[in-house]
Length: 435
Image 1: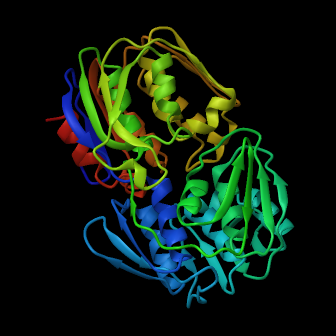
Image 2 (image 1 turned 180 degrees about the vertical axis):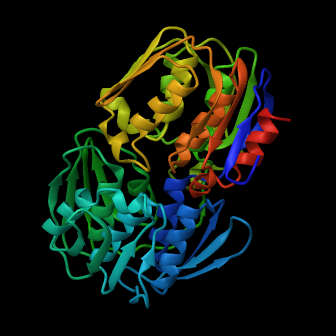
Image 3 (image 1 turned 135 degrees about the horizontal axis):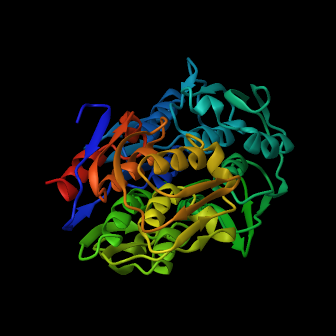
């Protein structure tokens, strides 16, 4: 295994207990909301992936004091609702779409001017979806071709709005909410269907005046945020790779400890249950009463899975897990259909095209559709060299596929990008499945 490839040995037995790193979505929001609070926050189990560290460094460049106390423990001295300072140079957001979109919202109502830029992949990801509502609020944001990074944000006084999201998007919703925090008046967002609600829960925990009524979220701005301590739960999107590996392997036993179980994120458990997986949840040792994010231990016993159709309102809650669900579909009995997933086209790679290409290389019968794919099950997986296309979730999904190969081995190229979300994936994968 060279530093930028993974070669996977087929595996026939899993019986272990693992802990996955802190949740990426919650880690980004912990840093940003702490930075706008008054007082000092302690954040434990922060995900120290490249994406989150880019957000951390950006906040430091904006004048926020963030001190590392241990491997994954940090203290953040809040600057208050509008206490950020002008950065001395452009802010590098790396590969992080979440970091860039949320920070763009946050900065649009601050008394600062800042430029946000990213790597080659992030530079091709659309930003108009946040620029449009922020501009309606009065924000001054310029972008390449009106849609792509780098973004230049000239912070100013904004106006509260009522905004109907054209598609369910936690990132767009969060950008608006973070922009609205210092404003006088009520901002209301109406979603077409539920998306991740980590931002709403975090803001409420820090004392914001925020109410949720069905698909409507209202924030009364101008109320100060009070520093609170956070213990970030394990990331269910990272756990998903291990869940599918165990669920699809008859006789396997796996426990994943202290995973975040926010109902807007547990779509992967719902999908695997529908496929016939044996998955049970038990309470986590951590005290969930301290704040609003649900958490627990996930117990998986391997069995034969069955193909299903996934689409509609289920898609926003499994959007990050669809590449590994595609692998589950290849291993299941019958056909699996993924539809209504156009959003996959504008992730770190075009995840529809890249997964179809890779699955075909390893012998899976799969057809690409404009909004997803149709996967023939009972596939006899064959060894091959596949490419991550610079996308961490493609890399990890194909590594899991390698556990089920009948002949040969799968080698995944270009895997350094895994560090954007799951820095210890390779040693943990080795420990669980390759030892």
